Image (cartoon, rainbow, N blue to C red; front, side, top):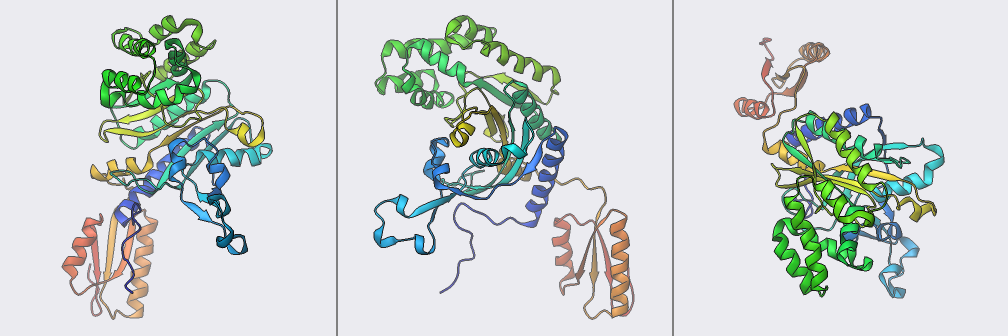
Length: 420
């Protein structure tokens, strides 16, 4: 049997050129988030299947790579359901593992706790451009901060990081789940129907207001309710100030303080941010996870033609593990999509020194080998990146390959005579 050279569908090998960019981006992320007071943590890639299926992951719960029980616990002949066979799964995001981690270690952690977590996650999804079945996620979260300082810090830390990576002219779209729910309640939808209504609303940018209205009507919702709902969104398009429009229209339907807190987020970020991105109130923004309880946000990157990350407040999740709710808010960068955009733009990792290749002829003497290694070490100490390699028969092709990898200077060492 011939073994397969190719990775499993939806997963990929990472070549050195991309790995160099990934390592650089990880370094920028860790340094920038560290400057905002976030500290790194790590959680296992495998979680208890009950945690992954806790009705917090939305559609992602249908995409879990599940793990069979092992050894004597796996009783295939006696199994009557999947529960008898499976006890774990590969994590589909970093939020559920973080909440479990916090619930387990809360007494050992500061409050508020500002966490940075980077790691691979797995989803049995349909692969496409910028989407894989194994991919890196990069999350920052603040747990224990009930006020909107969490949202402000998360947005500023994330956008500062993107700015350092050279991204410009992108939008941070922001909304609030409490505003979404108030709009649905004002229109006459029942609370049990909110999630289904929001799933249809999330298609608005693809099918337009008429398409959303038609789909909601076809789903069996009262036409008067649907019309009232869509009139809200049509009115928003003509409003000079969308936040004021929402506040005036919904009035007492909104929980006390929601508009004031939301406005404070907008004003604080606007007063602090640079000119390389815009913060945009988008009342059609839904975000797929049902665990969001307050402000939600998403990175809209024109170069990608879609979302490159997002997040929001999820105050009810810790309570699923401890019985006591803890305020929590997070923001995730679409790491793989950021890498894809950098690769497609021809991004080169900035270097303090230059890349130099030392090529040695085969059969070089021990004395000359020692001399070459000493020279290479001295050059590294001066800040240059030095590759020491044996010279190939086809030296021209070898140099072409190294040039493609960014090497700009070559030094050649021969058996008989030392040449530079």
